[in-house]
Each structure stands twice: as structure tokens, then as C-alpha cells.
Length: 129
Image (tube, rainbow, N blue to C red; front, top):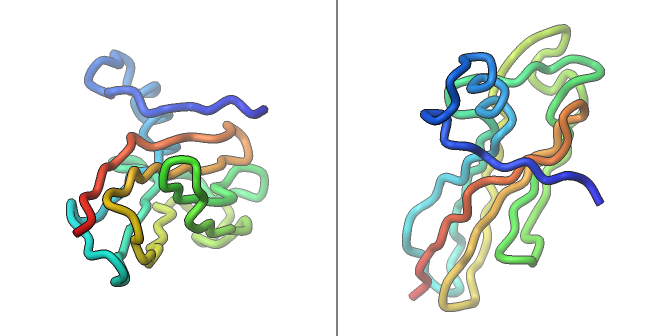
């Protein structure tokens, strides 16, 4: 089983290099706090908040997955060079359009870095009416 890395409050991290490392690998879930049952609901996952991730042949974000609890809702796969390659840096960002059918969503995103493994977001709870 792969090690799951989680975002650490970067205010508690003293060294800038550690802050950079954690931020550039962490996925962040962006969506509304409320959704309507049976209607498309956009959820954007962005890898990195302040810092961008490299896009090298041997070091890039290979995929981003979105879960509702333990249920996989969607996954986007990327190849090296998606963001320009050859040392280019950028934010991997993908929008999943899901249709909620439950009373609430417990959204968690995971991003896989080919060099540093799986990184998991902080859960986001969405009320469904």
C-alpha cells in the first residue's frame, strides 16, 4: 500500500523549502458549500496553492482523483509534458462535474506525484438539498 501524504499547515513549518515541498504536492478541492440533488455540480481540484509543481519526464503529477468518502467519483490521468515539459512548472487543475444523489458529500482529492507518491487533500463537506 502506498504511503499517503497529507497537507500540513504551512504556518507551522519553519523552513521555506519544506513549505514549498508540501504545498506544491497537495491537492486542494474548490467547490460551493451546497449542491442540489440530481443536478450537475462542478468540483475543481488544483494541485498546489502558492507553489507550482515541475513537469519533467521523471517528475510530474500523473493523476488526480476525486472521492466521496471511499467512493471514486472520477480520475484524470496526465503524461509528462502536459504543462509544457522540460522543467516547466504549473498547477495541474481539473474540474469534475458530478451529480450528487446523497444528503451530503465528503469530498477528498488525491494527487499522485511520480517522484513523491500520493498526496491527499483536506476533506470538504458539501450539503445536498
